[in-house]
Length: 625
Image (tube, rainbow, N blue to C red; front, side, top):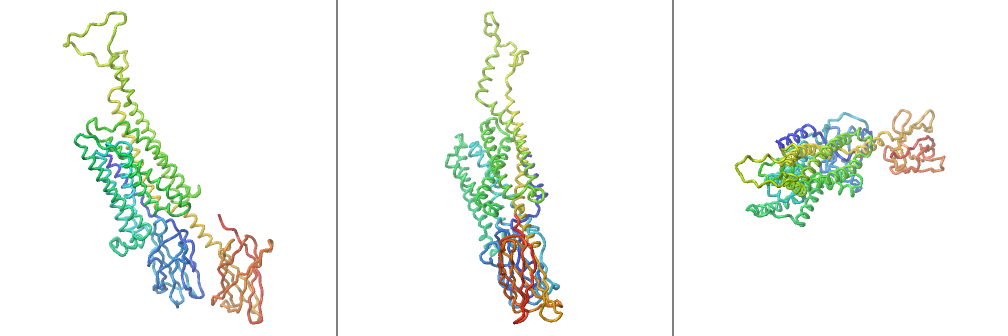
């Protein structure tokens, strides 16, 4: 019944709470920008992300208005920057609206996708159609998410049961429940890892479930960070299978009455090393591998996973042993329960400590706890953990009573009380020895009105039943914590979401556009120069200038110069060094050192001998923090 309850809880949480996962990285900018209208066709399209990304040959597609692909070669990193993706375009492109569809994999192993448009000459209708669903809102994505839950569960069972045997009660390795638990944990983790490896290619490329058996796609998946971690996990599981089989033979050899072998220090060291290695395969390809403080986040994530396995897997192991039906001498010793209680307390302490650090690293602010999906899910997890700690306090109380009942001092006091139950008459000769064996038996000890009975032998069973109930509740809540943790690993961290929003805010609202009229040198002819300064903040900026005639058409001028001066601080003039881009003038590396009011001087040479200078002011802001 306990196993059925646990399985039902897992399935209910999987079906009810496994929503679409978001990724760590986000698109922070593109060139050309989304919705921009260019006068001439660009040579390439470049995307910039908040974190490093990887991609396949078909990750970035540029589609013409007629839905024809115009990037003949696959994407590459721009200038060696791992957070960029760039594709070259065909030579001559017709006017109209182009669609850029992209799908890349962030450093934490989650795919992200999107699309935007830009136009050449003028906007037009387009026949290009791209998917707008979430990367995980597919059959492969949903199956991949369920398998991640299974993998975490297998890790918890395998690590927890093995730790219980190696640290708390070595004899438990010879019992059927523990052997089954180790087998179930190993099989669940191995099967889910194989399935995750097969689905890795379709998961990254939005393929179908049947494409999981494409050897070419599988070969590409193995070379990625996540695929390499899954391969390493399979190798470790093969080694663990050999060791488990060897240990099973050692226990089988002790079934004839010999005492089961005690694990030595070497066995514990090998077990700890394999557990750490398994946890590293998760940390290497999850949130810990991206973001800030990666060097510290990786070992913290490993400790968090191991503590989770020791606590939750050990709880389930203890629960199955407590519910086992058999002779009294096969019950779990009170000393083993006490050792697990101490070990579980340390594991929960590590869980809380590492969880606090991970929460700070991924959330970033108090406001994000209520304003982001990651923060709200984390609040639910914290609430469940607090409930677990409250239930665990009762488990520790029952454990203390059970250990006290089984202590040697307690046994000595009980035996002394049994010897003291012989009645003696004060000041009178001793009673004669009992001669008649046919008389009625004495009343049970402790039944007299003035005698205090010693604790009955059933007290230990009462304590065990109370402990079993509390451990059951604690194990169910632990499964809930495990499911929420798995959901968090597939949800975009709040800090990353904030960085993405800040980047989008800079790209959307930080651009400064100045429109300055000027005299074109002929009667009643007024031209206009449009200056675009992006992002319009301290640091490196892009400057673009377009000259229009009086009727709104493009004007070709032999020379255009833009300088900026900060008159209050005496900085400048800083020459933007514009270059003619065949239809507009541009510079991409103008660096502005200070915020404040800047004067923009624009010199337009309209003929070989005529030129005019106009000016305008622009406010440069500081970089947001």
